[in-house]
Image 1 (cartoon, helix red, strand yellow):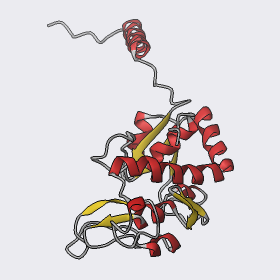
Image 2 (cartoon, helix red, strand yellow):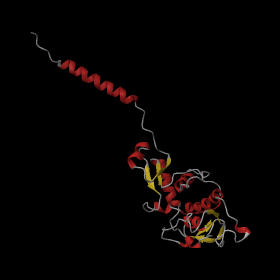
Image 3 (cartoon, helix red, strand yellow):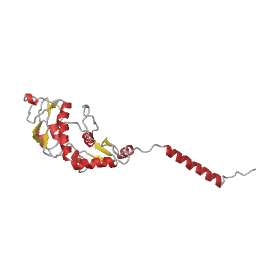
Image 4 (cartoon, one colour):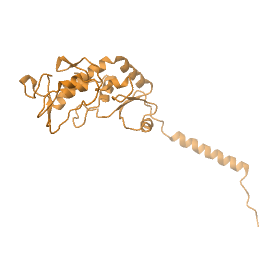
Length: 229
């Protein structure tokens, strides 16, 4: 009865060499990781960091919400920068962009709420439809509009019109005051790519079905594409 012979050292070495060669060939066929340098991406704040880094490797992640660290939280429309002109009534000022936006909102049973313009704690800023207020009718152009139809000059702006005539100009004022932080974001974009975290990710100004992402406005500003207001 013949004995089974084991593999010779030469055969084992050849097998190992072939295995390594095959591995190198497979690796060379893999597509390279995409470069994130130069990119600005808006992402939901709740997205896992592992997911973001897998999709945009090496990118700097900046939280620009009110929950973010300083100085980045100053990009939040809720942040009380102070002395922000109301775009449709520049003689009036608001502490924050969100305060102006929410304060000028008018409802079936409630007009302008000027108290929102002076808030500095970033809390209880939202004003939505309710049984007490009724439905949202639009945005007033003047802070003195105590009721939605107090005078012909105070006719209400529709949602898209208000977004363009109130929100965009007010947020532009904020961005123009944050030159140092904007320059730092631009540097991060060129160095590693940039991910801006926001609760809303709608970057389309014309899309009124979803709240507008202020991170999307930062992106436009960094890319020199901010709408003319």
